[in-house]
Length: 208
Image (cartoon, rainbow, N blue to C red):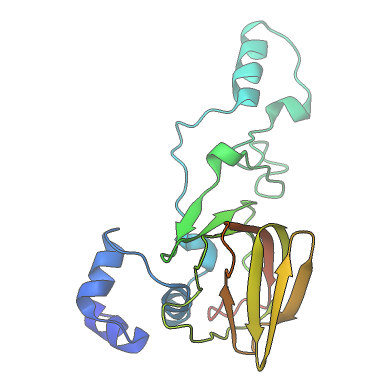
């Protein structure tokens, strides 16, 4: 697929798509969903990965233990920045330190941080950050995609419109809904919104 063809299908200009590709511009949530769908990609592949040089406290401790000739427990081999290194557990368990989270900035004061690095393609486990006044789409238009979405607000508040209904939820409140219903998010407050989000659905290359 050419850049012009992809831009036409995504309803954006070729120059804007080129700027996204070169890291000079950020796609909106709606444009990101559209690109994922058109490219048959997984949302996880759009997250920026941390450099391999990032070294966790556990790695340093394990390295020191090996140098001293000490025996290590399996837990000592754990890399807090990336999944298990042991081949038996590779890609099955993931603990991510806050300093090592991969991230997507989708503009409008919105970012998604990946909370787990497993290869499960039908699940996205993320920390959502919405600046005051931020809306998930530039024009406030709702989006749809396959699956179900679940969220828990840590701090701030989030206005969620699903279909014809609008809800405002705050800290310690949660929500779940069918993503095939048109929906849009907005932070109506004066402080940033932070929430834990889980998007789950059958992976067919057309959604999260």
